Image (tube, rainbow over all chains, first blue to last red; front, side, top):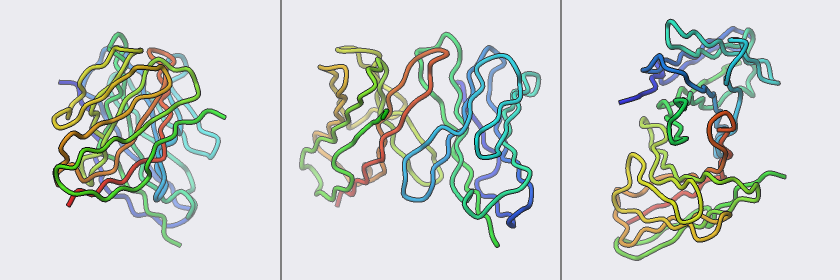
Length: 114
Length: 113
């Protein structure tokens, strides 16, 4: 079965430090890749997505993710985090040609400390 | 503004008392789905619908029903809720393929005692 693995359930980091949240998926066939963010007591918001083209995608608030087909990964990075980045981050995958279902990872809680 | 709405936002009920959580979208998307979110388990899909009158089971459909009589609405029905259905529920609407960005509702926190 197709699956998405987020290797870290919790990532504590100090403000202004760099961070990487890891995401791997199970298949090497064509995929669409997403990162969603969930701030405390809120729903999920799309952070960024990879559909095709450049393997490096960026969000408006400084996050970026790189699609690595050979390693079946889509890690999320930010060079300098803020307190306001504290949230839970979910990686999601849709396999091209599937019914359209998104498969989510179990989430990574990013906690930014002053 | 693109929006997915859910009602109610919070619900406490007792075992066996039928309930419905409504979901509505204003984006004319064909694809809608329901997820439940539980600590340590992430989001798991309950049911999805690819269009009016077309629904199918997701990963955890037991104990739930859905209907899609209109494109904008996709209610989630619990005929006989049980405590293991205590969870945070999200409705989502979006496209398919390259247009597969999913828009999520604000969530419904359900407690079954």
